[in-house]
Image 1 (cartoon, one colour):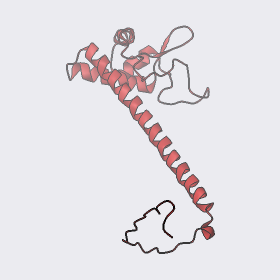
Image 2 (cartoon, helix red, strand yellow):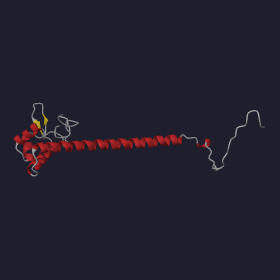
Image 3 (cartoon, rainbow, N blue to C red):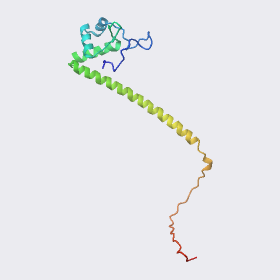
Length: 158
């Protein structure tokens, strides 16, 4: 796991000039300054899989704004909460898993709503195709009379 919920190691966004929170733009020295950590700490976090930045063609690390935020979160969990790095890695993995499951649940909810709309549309089409003029409606009185059938005897009777 790369500490970002399975983000690809592709450099850049959809277009060469698109900048998002996932755009890898910061070299390690700038990322260290922005996160308040030593560059060697960032390298260690990368080796441990806590925060895995994108790489350039020359294998240089490039951190995104999301990476910087994750570095700050790791630092806060480690220093303020006293959680060890293995625990932090597990927390990050679980948070990424929850985020992925929430995204999948949202996709399934949208698919369910689309299917319900399509079903209602198809149901309306079927109902519109009924030929109601061929189905007369009569209020039928129900009777509680009992009818007994008795077979005629062979060769006898009327």
